[in-house]
Length: 338
Ligand SMILES: [Zn+2]
Ligand SMILES: [Zn+2]
Image (cartoon, rainbow, N blue to C red; front, side):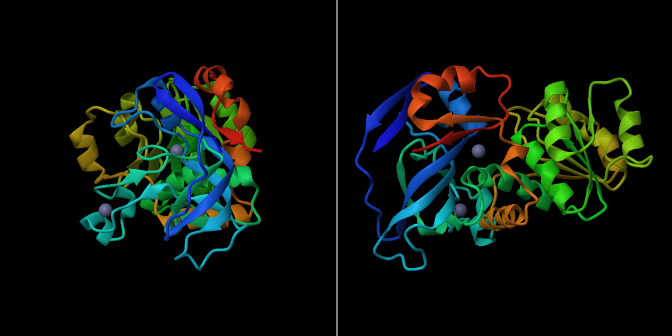
């Protein structure tokens, strides 16, 4: 099988590998579509911490089951599935309380072990989600949507809630779409006009520029004179995250789903007087994946909400640098196989 290996930062190399034999508890997946994530971009750039090379990237995977391990009897060859790339230890206290998404020993397929930039991939049978009746490119995006769904679930967004999503990258777009699907009133803030256009076109939601002088006024105007109950920050920007406390109403809630590798700093009196609920949101659980699969089947989430570029797997060695890494137009790319 053809496999594209990230040998070291900046270098992708084709290899011909043997199709893996599924272990007793595994299923062999014939890969159909793979989404490209920020992780895949940072790994190529050498900016991904705790990352070892060589590595086969790709953790947003749609494929068909091609073979079953000897101990697998609840799946059939030919079923279309999404890969759930998080391999949790099921022993640590986080796992034992059902929070496998923040397992102390988590390993991610396509990050800590080889992933989907390959024609075939063998994964544990509990790491797949049945996803039939949904377009393969949408199935590949169940993973980023599930991260967004987890953030929305953390905030317990209810119908009618006023929700501001800051940052219109794939995770912010997903969070906005899912909060809207839950019946919330949603606005999206991003500094980039092109991202705001995408939000208006694909999500049909109002947008704001957080750097505009009248940002706070427009925010209140959008929510009938109030600040939002919930701010979901998907920027990973310290300037934005440090501002979040000033954007919620009293009794409001902040979810940081983006990650900034440094210290944050904000006003404690502001935080305190609002009795702020502040939460992190990391990865996603199997329940979040299933929830996204359902929303896709109901037509409430579509690939186009994130997807801007399609690439061919057999050309990826030569197109990755200019069409993915150095492409400011790219929001979400999906690789097509076969
Ligand atoms: Zn991802
Ligand atoms: Zn664990």
